[in-house]
Structure formats: C-alpha cells, structure tokens
Image (cartoon, rainbow over the protein chains, first blue to last red):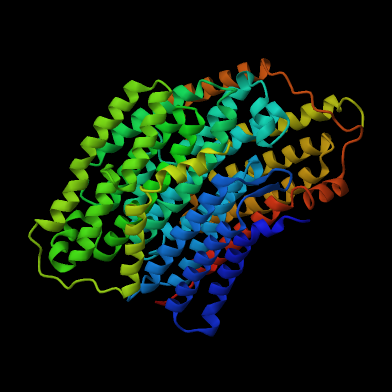
Length: 456
Length: 167
C-alpha cells in the first residue's frame, strides 16, 4: 500500500518509545533515556512537517490536510520541549524514563487524533492519548492524595469516554457508517440529535468545559505539577482538532449544537475566570484557567464558520504553550502561589519569562494569546454572537486579576530564605523555546490561521 | 439465514438478560451481584448468537464473561475484609429514579421515531472468516492502535508494581 510514508512521524514515535523503554537495560542513567525521548519527539515533529499534506489513508480514516500537518508538528514539538525540560531536572522525578515513554505514546495518540476522520479510529486514538495520562497523573504512588487525584481523573475520563462511545454507536446506528462524510449528511432525527449530544457531552468533559469541568481542579491538584504540565496541554490540542473536525461535519445536520456550544462557552468563561480567583495552588488556578480557555475555544466553535474552526485550533495552540511553561516553572519552584514568592530575586530571568507567559494568557498584544483571542472574537462577531463576545472580553480583562497574583507573588512578596532550584541549563532552554513561540507565533498568526483555515 | 429469529428462544434470552440485570441491582450481596452480572453477560452472548453474530458472541463470552467478571470477583474478594462486608444496603434514591425515567422516556421516544437508514444487508450473515478478512484489511489501523493501547497498559502495570527509586 503506497502512501504509508505519511505515517513516518508515528513510526518514529513508536520506535523511539520502545527504544527509550529498553534503554534502561543498556544505559544506567534515566536522564539519557529522557534526552533520547526528546530527540525522538523533535524528530517526529520535523518528520510531520517534511512529510506534509497528502491523500487520506485507510479509506479516509486518516486525513493529512494542512490542519493535520500543523497540529501534528505542534504536538511533536511541544512534547520535545517538555521532554527536554524533564531531562534537565536534577534530581529528576522518580522513574522518569518510563514517564518519557508514556509522553511519547500519548504524543502518538495525539497525532493520530489530529488526523482521524472516522469514529472508531478517533475513539481508539483518543484512548491512546489519554491512557498514558492516567499513569502520569498517579505518578507519585506513595502519595495518597496524588492517587486520589489520579483515580478521579481515571474514573471520570472513563465515564466520559463511555458517554461518547454510546453516542458514537448511536451515530453509527442512525447513519450506517462511521466515516465522517457519511455521518454528516444523514438526516439526524431525534436519535441522531441524542447521539450528537452524547458525543459532544463526552468531548466537552474531556476539554474540561463547564458544566462538565468539576473533575479537573481536583485531579490536577492531586497530581504532580510535572505531569499536569503535559496532561493539561498536549492532549488538549489534539482534542480540539478532534472536536473541530466532528463539529464541522455534525453542526450542519444538528444546528442546535451552536446553542449548546454558546451556553457551554459562556458558562466556562464566566465560571473559570471567577473560580480561579480564590485559588492558592498554581495547579488549581491553572485548572480553572483551563476551563476558561476551553470556553474561548468553544466560542469560536459556536460561530460555526471555517474561520471559527481555524480560530479554535489556533487558540488552543496559543493557550497550550504558555500554559505548559507556567506549569513547568511551578514544577521547579513549588505548587503553591506563595512558593513563587521572591522568584524575581532568586531567578530573575525565570520571573520575567513567567510575566511574558502570563501576559500571553491574559491576551496582551503582541503576544500569541492576544492573536488567539482576537481571531476567536472576530469569528464570533461575524457569526452574530456579539453579546457573548462582550462577556468574553470583560471576563478576560477580569482574568488579569488572578494572573497578576502570581506576578505579585514573584516580584513583591517577602520570600523566606530558601535554596534556588538549580535544574540544568537545558531546562532554561526549554522554557526559552516556549518564550520564543509565545513572542513570535503571534507575528505569524495570519499565515498559521490561513493554513488552518484552508481545510475542512 | 431466515428472516426472523426464533421467538421463544429470543424471549427466554431477553428475560434472562433483563432479569439478570434487575437481580444484579436488587441483590444486597456484592458477590451475588457479580454473579448476576456474569449471567447477564452470558445471556447477551446468547442473543448475539441468535442474530448470527458468532464472533461477537465469542468475544462476549471470552472478554466479558471470562475476563471482566473474574476481574470483578477478584477485586471484590481482595478488598473485602470480612464476610459481612459483602452485604451492602440497597438505597434507590429519588434523583436516580427521575434521571432513569427521563432517560428511558427519551430513548423510547427516539427509538419509536427512528427510521433505519437504507443500508444494503448481505444475503447471508457474514461469518468469522469474512470478519477476520475485513478486520485485518480495512480496519487494520484501529486494530494496530489498539495494540499500542495494550502496550501502554502493560508498561504501566509493570511500572506501577515495581519497587524502588530510580531517578
């Protein structure tokens, strides 16, 4: 079968994951294993870019359009940066070689999810993307709170998967096919509407959008920050693509979905931004901030235009980079907001990088977060959702308050005397890469969006 | 393949399925509940067999009746400290009943209004051979991804049960 060369990035990831796993036998240092993992992820990102677009494979189950290429490259690159950071930690988290294997396999699942245009492929790729996350969330086995968080994450993730799978099986019953092209044109009927609702309730819960967000803060607060940095960002990017692809085929047949998305978007933006205020743990704060960002992504989907779909994917990418970087700094420094106190004095470069990441999350120009929000709002206004945009703009102004609490803690709070964290230089390079993306991706927003908007 | 299935057998199996599920909910002993679950799964396998889905019936027996119910029994027996712990009160809440009734009504409405899509059915029910052929050609991709999911589970299980620090 020709065309299989388009799966080279996935092949690199599989081979690399197994190599990292087996490297434990040859090399004594887990650090080298994680470094190998970073190289593998970077290689797969480059491969995804080089292989480029092409004809679909497996009778349309996997598509390789511009959006797939962009997102596959982005996911690979994000994982590479994450593993680079992980390899520099000294002493590193317990058994990080295996963690690198899980990260690589989750990346593989994410890449397949970004290409999937068939329900069974999507579901099994989604499982491959989330299974490693269950393990990473329960990484500290001796910590009962961490295990509780991991168990919550596992049970709720499974429940939402089942709801989604139930919806998918009903979609199959209603249309007689699992290919996206066939499920979209089917006259839905009441059963079809239920099926679509079930599928999207499952997906909304996976994106931690209100009112299905309640699992996220508890699960994240129980897990080590190292794991949250990965689990709360990379799988979400892939999930957004899956969301966008499904919405693009199902919204024409079930227009009511637009209302569902608009309501979920409003609830997520308001609730996420308000509930983040009283949090004193960076992980909980970022979990609620993630709820709010899922709301902005949904706002673009509610627009139901190609521009809106492209804006949703671009927005998730614009959110994932700084959000991961903030969690990585929190993983080095400590997870309470007070742990960041005095960071400006201890490690000024890190403190200023944090400022840039947080400003991007608020949406200050010329950082990437600003362009993300701008395109989401433009798409929504074009679709006539003006009142929703007004609320969203006000909420993102309000969000500055809790992000600035972190800044205040870093620059102005009295810090107790403590040893500065001293990870290797590579960790700083990983964060600097995130900073570069945050600063520069905004400048190329037009091109990126054009690439994303071409497809559907 | 005849157009209709044997009515008597169908009603016996349907009764066994629904009755087993009800008994599973109603019994207060979790070990008994596990066995009723097993009975329900076996009866469902019988329904699949009745519909000429041999492979599905086989998988149902192997995976659900074989693996899942054994797993359930293992978990119950490993976590129960005393014999009396197996007895749990049955507390059907009003909220649950309302949700169940709403769901039942919605599904009933949806199914009665459902118009099956015009999909051409094969003249004879495909057997395991045809199933295997399509599984490893057209559906090879999900099959292979599933094997990776199993790899993750395997590594995770080993990782989870291993002792010691290794930084």
